[in-house]
Image (cartoon, rainbow, N blue to C red):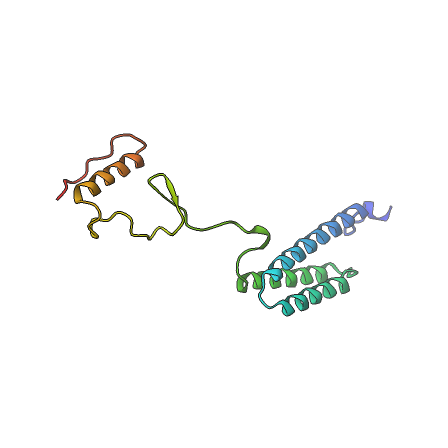
Amino acid sequence: PPWVGAGGMSSPNTVASAAARHRGAVLKAYRDLVDVVRRSSPVAARDAMLEEARTEIRANAAETDESKRLDLLRKLVARVGYLRIVTPKGGRHKREGGTFVVREGELVEDGGESKGKRVADGKISMQEAHDYHNRLLKRQYFGRKPPPQPPML
């Protein structure tokens, strides 16, 4: 075969595997684009953006020039990157988030900024607050004796 001894030519298997890798990269970028576009706000713009991406990818599917294909892939990845910046989080990689606060062994639904027990409000005494602080220190040091604290004023 002519590609065996030739210095600049590659085998058909190498060309096929490069094409398969490129196809996989384009499909991944397209899936990422679909995820980001589905999170974008105007519904009419979503459909238009997806249709534009589909037609552009299909129109360039038969491209054989390697540098042209890589340039088109870079443009698609750049478009996905820009849309990620301007679109709110969510989609395929969505994680549940929020503030979780546990007070006295119970999960508190509201945020951590609730008033709770405070000396300034007069809800607890200074001695109770100091005892609570020492309990928290002991917990922080996993039941071992914490370092000495300054005396209570």
